[in-house]
Amino acid sequence: MGVTVIKIHFVDIILILLDFFAMLVPLLLMIAIATLFERKIMAAMQRRKGPNVVGVFGILQPIADGVKLLTKEFVVLTNSRKLLFIFSPGITFFLALLMWVIIPVPSNTPVSGLFDIDLGLLFLLALSTLNVYGIIMSGWASNSFYAFLGALRASAQMISYEVVFALCLLPVVLITQSFNLREIVMFQINNGCWNIFIVSPAALLFFIAMLAETNRTPFDLPEAEGELVAGFNVEYSAIFFALFFLAEYSNMLLMSTLFTLLFLGGWGIMGFVSPLIFSIKVCFIFFCFVWVRATLPRYRYDQLIRVGWRVILPITMGYFLFVSGTIFAVSKIF
Image 1 (cartoon, rainbow, N blue to C red):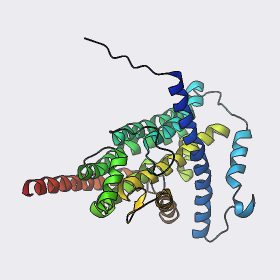
Image 2: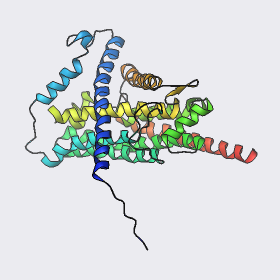
Image 3: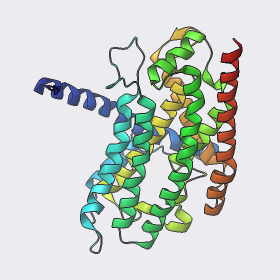
Image 4: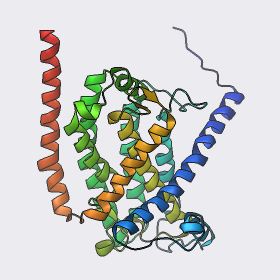
């Protein structure tokens, strides 16, 4: 029996690293813009001005915040598990970045996704499940009751809504017959109909699961300021806190992008294909994140778990069985 040897040249490794950094720089810029975008929208909804001092219309506020966090003193607690305490933010940020490598981009652009994986959705689900480990390790390593309680909340919440998150993807997979994100987008463009019109309940449930997966209002229990001071990252400051902050907004942008690819036809609309169309759709979903934050109050923790297991999960499973049964019946008839 022969053994297959895969040769990886040094040049290939350099090219992959260059592609990764070419993705990283625009992503960090997008995160900076997203923070300003959120603060401006929140200010408008609450009838106040928001950032307006640093730069014209406050446009340099994200840069000022970044410089402040980078220049602050690192504080490592004496009684913390120092190795895990230091590495946990980096692990969380790295996993958040790693999920972007399979995101496709429009075919008419000079760049493409790093990896075009046939089982891209499964890869994404696996990495999103790993996200909780960085939060758990940071809460446990801090040796603080508030941080540890926030980490326990995060683990229970993410496990509860991870099932809903995965089940909402299955109707799309059944309709498009693919786990590849680019093929799912091309299916919608070629048929001239977005998946949100075909499986609307799945899109709504997926959006709810997105809010829970990213720990956003009304599901931001792991970092509830009124109860846990700041939750799992209460003991972090300076660059350590910045990495958690960047990971959170990276996940928000990723989920907005994923919703656009799965349900809104990606970079196509009415026969037109453009990166600008794709950007507008992603910005609209991100706006919905902020809209929900400015509108809805936070759930109690027992309500969060009860709604997840007793309401949303049964509805999601029932809808998945309905879609799969309908597709099977139609295939038998026609």
